[in-house]
Length: 262
Length: 278
Image (cartoon, rainbow over all chains, first blue to last red; front, side, top):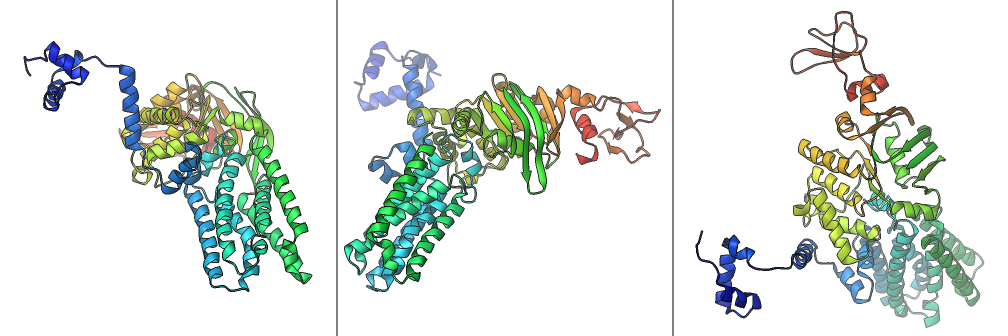
C-alpha cells in the first residue's frame, strides 16, 4: 500500500508515450499495485475488449499447417482453406493421390515402355480413391456432426473432391512427360480422369461415396477391357472417345454443381 | 413448432420408429425410453442426418425431405449426437471453429468471436488451446455441446448430453439448457430421470418406436401414484424393490394393506409405465 500517487504531469507524459523507458516501466509497476491511479488512466473499453479477443484468439489458435498456408497463398479464402486441409480425411485423400502419382513417376523414370498402358488405365481412377477417402461416415470421425450442418452433402463433397482432383491431376500431369510415349498419348488420361471424378460426384447423390467411386472405377475398367477385347486398347484414348469423355465430364459437373449450390 | 406425423424407420427386421406422431413446441422436451426404443433414430431424423422410410417431419414450416428446405433447416439447428466423435489432434478451439465454418460462419473475426462465446458458455475457455486428446470425457462432452450452440440455433437436439458429466458439470449443464429452453425448442434424450425431472417441461416416453407417454414430469410421476411404498422388511412378492440409505425397503408395485405409502418420483412413473422393459 502506498500513499504516493502519479502526479498529473507524469501521467500525461505516460499517456502520450513520451516518458523514458525506465520511468514508463516504473509507472507501469505502480499502476499494477495502485487501483486509484489505474482508475485515473482513461481507456477505450471496446478497443480493449476487441484487442483482448484478438490476442486470446492468437494464443489459442495453433499455427496453420503447410497445406493450409499454401492454399492461402494461392488465394483460397481462409475458411475454405481450413475446410480442405484441416481434416484427417482430407490429409489421407491428398496423401493417397501424392503417393500414387509419385510411384508412377518413379516407375516411369526407369523408362519401361510396357508401363505406359498401366499408367493410362490407372491414372483416371486414381482421383477416385482420393474422393472416396474425402467424405463419409466411414472415413470421417465427426461425420455425424458434419452431416447436420448446412455445408454438408454435395457442397462439402464438391469442395473436397475438387481439391483432390486438382492435386491428382496436377501431380499426374507432372508425371506424364516422364513417360516414354508421345506427348498426346501420355496426357490421354486427363479427360477420362475428369469424367470419372465427375461421374463419382454425380453418383454420390444416390450411393455412398466409396461405392460410387468403386462403381465408376468398374465402369472405366469395363471400357478399357472392352477395348482390349477388340484388340485395340489405345482406341479408348482416341479422339472420338475423348470428345465423349469431355462431354460426359461437363454434363456431370454441371448436374452436380446445380445440386450442390441449391 | 415441429410436427412429426406417422414417422417410420426400419433397420432390417427392426422397426426403430413405428408410425410416431409427436408435436414439439418451445421449451425443453425430454425423451425417455429403454435402449432401442427409437430415441436416437428420432433425433437423427430431426437433425436431418437420417432419412425416415415413411411419414413426415415439419420443422418451422420446413420439410427436411426437400434438399433446399433441409439446408435451410440445418442453418437453424444445433445437434449434439450420441457419439459426436472428434479429431484428437485438433485443439478445442479448432474443432468448434471447424464446425463453425461448416455452419457457414465465413467471416473470420465474427466466427472466432462466436467460437469464444460458445466455449465460454460451456466453461471451456481455459481449455481452448488444449488438444482434444488431452481433454477428459466430460470436457469432450461439453466441447460437443459447445459446437451445437454455434449460431444460437432455434432447434437444439441433444442426444444423451449428460453422459460423462460429473454432478457439478451436470448442474451447470442444466442451468445452461434451461436458459436455452426459454427462447427455443430443445429436445434431449436421456436415461437420467433426474435430468428430466429437473429440466423438462414435457417428457415423452418411447418404447418400440412409439410414444407411450406424453405429458409433464409430474404427470409421469403420477403414473405410480399409490404404487410406491416403504417397509422394514423385504416384500414377499417378487416386485421391484431396493434397500434405501435409511435401511428401509422401497417397493414399486401393488401395496399390501399394511404398506407405508410414499410419494412417487419421475423414475417410479417411468418404471411403472414400462414395467420390466425399462
